[in-house]
Image (cartoon, rainbow, N blue to C red; front, side):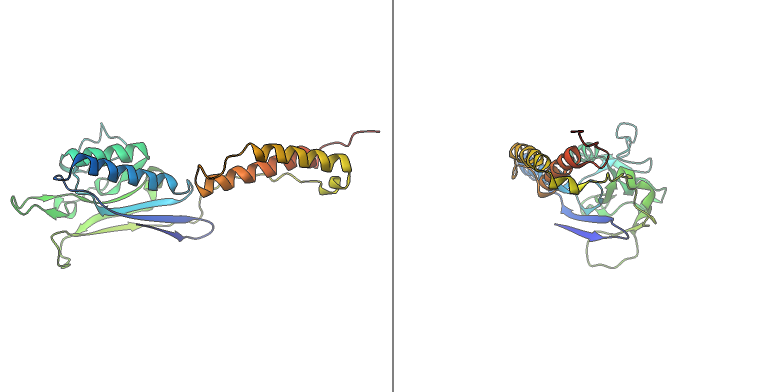
Length: 234
């Protein structure tokens, strides 16, 4: 399940809620879960912040050197097979598991008690894009929360940057009055038709299709209607 929310300015944050398969599930179910998760992550616009929340039934361990940038120096316990799948997914998508970043007592890191051994483990995660690490002030388990479950509540405090990083774009001026010239109008129309016919819509996502259409229309207009293009002398 995902939800896209607007932030200040033109920024957005996409929240993804997930529940991972347990260790007893067949491998094909685990693989399908992470394939679907990766597909959902890649469908989020690149400029969006991503916050993934959920019980992944996975232990990611403490090997921050092998998984540099994916987990911090403050993980807990040993990893397991499910944890390895989660780590690989985060590495492939440039994601950071924020539970492992902050130096806290183990009771504020572990989130689930195994019924048989009574040992506490970290299986509930808050995951963000690696580039947004500075937005996260703390992620920790709430020890005293009475929530009628065998899991501790996870608190994650984030700040919103005053401005979202944006690439400056210089909009070139179009001399639309040139369209009054038959030759310019005809050349522009033929060139645009040719380039649009080369596009293949429907095979990618809506965002990708729109970006491709927008770029073709704009770049074709620049070619024929650029304000800086000199008129041919008679």
